[in-house]
Image 1: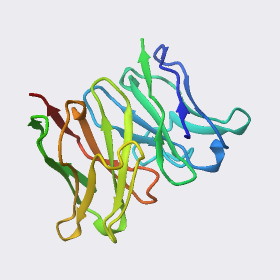
Image 2: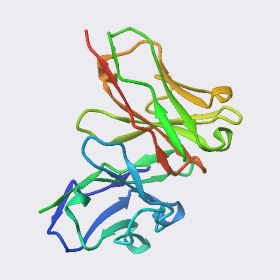
Image 3: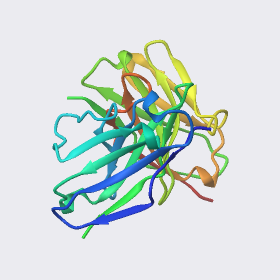
Length: 111
Length: 118
C-alpha cells in the first residue's frame, strides 16, 4: 500500500522559514500530484498547495510546494512565519488506482 | 461562491443507522467529484471514498469498503454518507470535499460530528 510519511511536529519562530517534508513509500512521488492542506484547531481543512506547487487564490506567496525526486519526497515551505500559521498540515496524493492517500499530518508550532 | 454545507451533528446509539449529507452550491454539482474524509478524535485525515454525481461513479478506500455507502442526488445537489449499523468506533468528524479530478480537493465542507455512544 502506498503511504505518505510526515514528521509528527515541527516548530519555528515568527519571521523564520520552516519546511515540512512528505515522503512516499514506493514508486515515484513525482508521478502523481501532491497537495497540502492546512487545518487550524477546531476548523475544517483548507487547501494551501495543489498540484505540487500551485497556490489557490487567497493563499499568500509565503507558502510554496516542491518535489524532490532524489529523496522521493514533497515539501511545503512557509516563509516569514506568522502565529496564524500554527496549524496541522497534511500532504495528500494518490496511488496507481487513483485511491487517495493522506500523510499522517504535521503539527506546526510557531513560538 | 462555491459552498459545501454539511448536515448537523448527530448522536446515535450503536447499531443504529445514519445518513449525513453535503449540499453543494455555487457550481455545477454534476461536474465535480465529492469525497468523504474521516477524522477521528485527535487523529489525522482518512480518505473514505468519492462519488461523481454526474454518473454516480463511486470509489471506496479498501479500509471503508462495505462499511459505509456513498451516494448522491443530483436533483438537489446533495451527496450522502450512510451507515447501516453504527459502532462506537465510528465516532468522528466527517468532512466532504469537492474535487475536479477525483484525486485532489479544492473546497471542503464544515464537517459533521458523529458521536456513537450507548
